[in-house]
Image 1 (cartoon, rainbow, N blue to C red):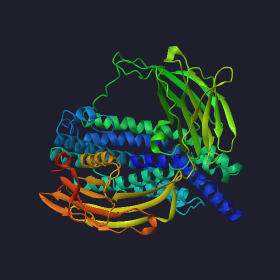
Image 2: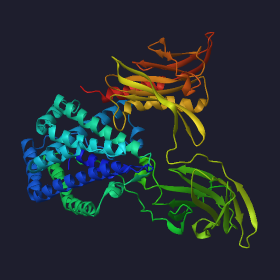
Image 3: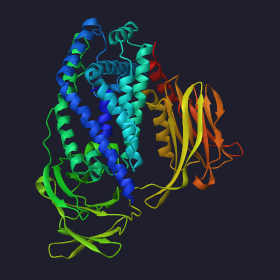
Image 4: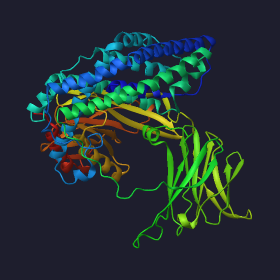
Length: 612
């Protein structure tokens, strides 16, 4: 399975299950027909792949051996790969210069691009016997449509990925690797850059669609399509799952072939990750329960041993609450499995109540007094829910208590907690923060609430777009500005980190200010920074100090219906700005931000990343 195919699998494994709309009989029939066509096409392709399994494996192994034999030991002198996806660890950043950081990032990215070429080559060898079936599969998926437009987008993107894999030219891996070596591990040739650009564009599209879908309650594709399946379709789906299991051995063959190739060309092994000195035991299960919303949760506790110098309210018990059935609304939550945690102190008990909204569910948490045995949750409709307290014993860092409950939103909302002792007497009443409008779709945009304000390209920066968004979330109005770069990579650019971080940190320290600055920076085609933000007073001005000269940011009126509370100020700069200055209508300076250190660091990092 190639790099793009792997992304396609992830893409089709996830799909948003939005609130079911009223569907007509014709709509459901169309959805059922599309589902049936998809299942037939999938099973047909998989059956062909299984029939050709031995041939495909042999082709992968032979191709890896052939390519390695064409350039034996060519990478013997290559710099060692960094662990963790080629990223440079925070500890190593402290001991190396920004230029060295940029150089390591460039080497890591280029090595990854060349590995992608090899994966494409192996994938092409694997698909040779299945090429006609793969083309038929792509043609079958292309016209399919569902009443849920995002499902349609997901399938069409998967079809695009399959088609792109079939159309990508098979690279001359040895020639491309040799060109990289000849450049001193600094420059990829034109072919490698073109392949990297095409693969990167598709990967970014995939991640963006998944990110959109992750704002919904995610379900697996089989679950999502199940309502449109009849008995024969369900049999097809089960057969497809069986075939998927049989085809898993292809991944193992490709991984082994990749290792064989890397050894043949003399590629140094990645730096080993440091193993923890002591293997931590899994926290003890403290309690299990069921929420009012129907989910089941597990509470785990680990005793913390604070040092002698620890403060009086130091954490004595680390609590983790896992609810596997809870919805996930973000990629980080999706891949972490979703959990919540608290650090409790037996010497200093504060309620610290929290009400959190996630996909239409309200999660209520609070610390409890050691004597609390049960808790009564009061809802805004005067209904109450009584449940036992989660108690942490002394051996795990107690005695302390914890409350955990989940109710469905948006109403009634949780109002307060009443802590009760063993006799049912009230020990304390804890007021909860009010959380309103907790629905699966938290953002409720105003009419025409997303507006493209700017779309530009300059000689020193990639094309970029600045958008304005106005919406309500949990009853609170919000206005945001966002920027998208045409060449933005999946994991960002290290050269951008310093200037963007400096802007972000200064914004946090300022709180509400005359100009809420944001930044997007990068290294290609040269070090640049796009500074933008909301300027509260239209008569004020923002200037950037660039090469000793003050350059004004441009301003743009934001449509009144967005209720922005200011105007957009923005500018593109290369070299990087070393200071931002805000002046009022009279010309008096009302704010300054020193960016000289960040600009120097970002420039040096970009110089390290630069090819040649």
